[in-house]
Length: 208
Image (cartoon, rainbow, N blue to C red; front, side, top):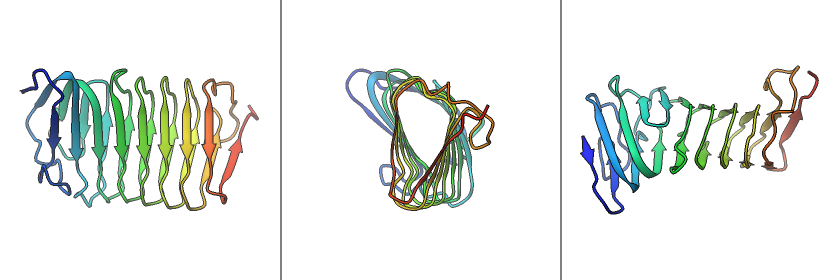
């Protein structure tokens, strides 16, 4: 149990911290972090070379080879999660209103699912052919898909969603059942801003 107290504190989690390139598999007991509201937590799994699955909620980070309880947290201003190269599946089921969250998905072929975000969220696809699925968002979302051939599926926007596809030949699918067809675009209620690479395709599906 870590109580940071007052001040702007930094908590680094990873097997080589404060050096990068570690893994989080050694977090097998319950790690509870109680922040001050102005703290930053950096979670480093960049040394992992196997495919992992992880989930972020308002108060927990689980999976990624950690013990069943993972990391339980509160009072963070900034949360940075950096994954490895194995090809990961990561779900953001929600983010805290007062927390700026950044996910670096790693260099593998990753799948990132964004269900809901209440705070500002940035997803950096990095290298690898990634798939990023946006099912809903309430606050500002920034998608930077990286340098390979990526697929971005956008079903719902509730606030500002910025998509920078990066280089490569990317596909952006917009519709309520994307990447499938037969959906509607009524759920695109927040601003959706897409900046392509010049070789990208956008499919907008309102056939339903």
